[in-house]
Image (cartoon, rainbow, N blue to C red; front, side, top):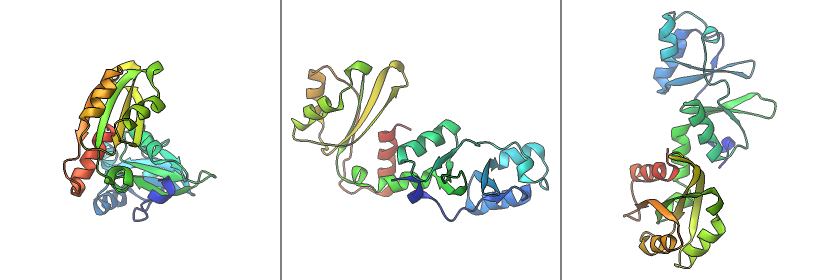
Amino acid sequence: MIAEDLINHMLPPLKGTDDAHKAIVWMEEFRCAYMPVVEDEKLLGFISEEIILETNDIEKQVKDFELVGQNCYVHLDTHFYDILKIAANNKLQMVAVLNQDQNYCGVITIQDTLISFAQTAAVQLPGGILVLSMNHNDYSLAEISRLIEENHAKILSSIVKEDPLDAVKLRLTLKINQVDLSRIVATLERFGYKVIGRYHETKPEGDDKDRIDMLLRYLDI
C-alpha cells in the first residue's frame, strides 16, 4: 500500500484565511484532533483545538497560529511503513500527502491506515507473531527464514527496527503462517536467537478489534 491509495477524501483542509471558530467546528464535525491548513496548494501545518484555546481568539485566522507538523507529510508513492514512521516522529494521528511539486493532495489518518493494513493478506491469514532481539551483525533474514521453513512454515511479513531497550541491538518482528510457534521458537533458540515475544491468533476469524490489536502488537506501536 502506498499513500495515494490511503488518502481520506472526506477530510477537507482548512484555508489559511479561515478563522479559528471554523477550525473548531470542523474538528468536531469530522472528529479529528487536528486539521491540515493549506494555502495556495501548500501545506502550512496542522492546527488543533489546544493550539486555538491557548490564544483564546476564535476570530483569528488559522495561518496566524503557531501551527505544528510542517514536516508531517509524505509523497504519493510513500510506502505504508514510512507513513507510520512520519506520523510517529511528528506525534500526529494524520499525515499530509504532497505530489512531486510539493502541492497538497490530501490527508491520511493513521486509523484508516491501520484498518487498511489489517485487511491485507499478511494480517488476515491465520498465523502467529514472533519478536526477536539480536545484535546487528547477527541479523540475517535469509538464515532465519531457512530455520523457519525447516519447520514447514513461512514468513508472511517482517519488520526490523532498533531495539528501544538496547541501541546496539535490532528487534525483528515476524508474522508466520502457523499458529503453534513452539517448534519454531525451539529451533531459533537452539541456534542462538533470543525470542522476546510471541503472539497467537487463537481464532481463524477474529473481529475487527482483534485484528487491530494483533496488528498493533505486530507493529509494536
